[in-house]
Image (cartoon, rainbow over all chains, first blue to last red; front, side, top):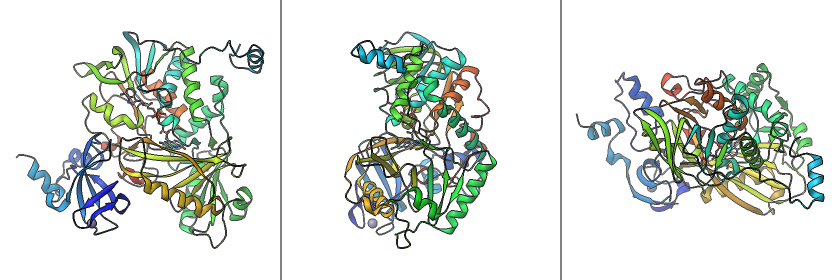
Length: 98
Length: 419
Ligand SMILES: Cc1cc2nc3c(=O)[nH]c(=O)nc-3n(C[C@H](O)[C@H](O)[C@H](O)COP(=O)(O)OP(=O)(O)OC[C@H]3O[C@@H](n4cnc5c(N)ncnc54)[C@H](O)[C@@H]3O)c2cc1C
Ligand SMILES: [Zn+2]
């Protein structure tokens, strides 16, 4: 598997580590909603097909990347900096209509 | 009389082996069953066997999308052990050991269970301390565990590099002598045959594509071979759990599917009569009766539903093997393959009623479910028959994650690629 890092270009997957699913929703630090915290820590979408995920280019520029990858064919669909998606709880606020 | 015995072997040999019956029938699915089990791996088949044998429930079908043994039951490296840390795991895996010890007789099928031991090597004092702790926990539960010195290890595994100049010098190890190996596909075939002989329909090439529902209640399945109704639907699909649960509308589970690879070398003369694990990385190795070294290492490390692995892991596993056994450098690799592991968030399995009425769930085996095959089927059959868990599997619920009652043997937290 070759991952094209936006900084470093095409690199072997062994330079990267898989961190977590990209769509996980971290509750606000002040939240006392136990169910939301449990879901954040333990529940996974685990898609067979195009999967939204966070990787780190730990053997390169060390940037965190948001990657869409097909878990059946291992084809990489897109790679972007994770920071462009905001921190997880900000992401939730942006994506969840009030 | 038992179908397989020295007498029938001799008789059939003299008669040209024409009179053997197929080990199981190839029935077409009926319109309905008392119990439908999805997944014809080790766990689905052993569940069917114990439903029939222990609970007299024989109107049962096992639905397998491919052929028997096409999943992990035919892809694993066959290590059987019970040397865990936590008491829930001790009780469950020791029950499995008890069943393994009599399995060939029980099934009248030789599963080649061989208690050749499993030795974990230690390379740092901290690691040795951790082994002492685990060994003591095991002995408290009545499970054998023995600390070994480098001299004892050298005598047991002469091919191992235990010199001080090794890349990661060995300083000791912990042995479970009652651990060992079994022939994996014989386990699948033996359970399939035992279930079939008791009236269970084992149906191959039958993929479940959806669930029949009456409100919340699951009332059957749709398959590539038609609709099948059932009073109870049990799921035992290991690495495909995420996919199958989505068919019933459950989109999130405490599971990630990841690939584990395994390798077999060309046949060698006997050099290793135990199962050995490396302590400075993920590597373990045993030798089959045919002489091939059977070995593997870590997960590929990311979600995958492809039953094949990546090349960086191939390199890593072999470099670990050579760190332990420099003398194997010129041995050729015969084959490698990958299997889908249902990695749970605490590294422990799930055997439970639900999560919907009419449904039963068995999953979360990570890369260690082969050793569990007898106890998993035994406990799952109990749970299905009685609509409640046996005390042995009562801790292994699905809601333990949300109740804070996780069973995290390695203390890794909710990071499946580290279990
Ligand atoms: C490389 C490797 C090495 C391993 N080594 C060990 C080891 O040394 N010791 C150990 O204890 N464990 C080991 N394991 C783990 C062990 O093999 C598994 O945990 C165990 O086999 C899983 O249970 P099973 O046998 O029921 O799974 P499987 O054999 O995978 O059975 C699940 C079945 O469900 C079927 N299925 C899936 N979806 C559907 C559907 N929609 N409809 C119908 N059928 C479906 C699949 O085709 C499959 O046959 C290893 C695993 C791997 C991959
Ligand atoms: Zn980079």
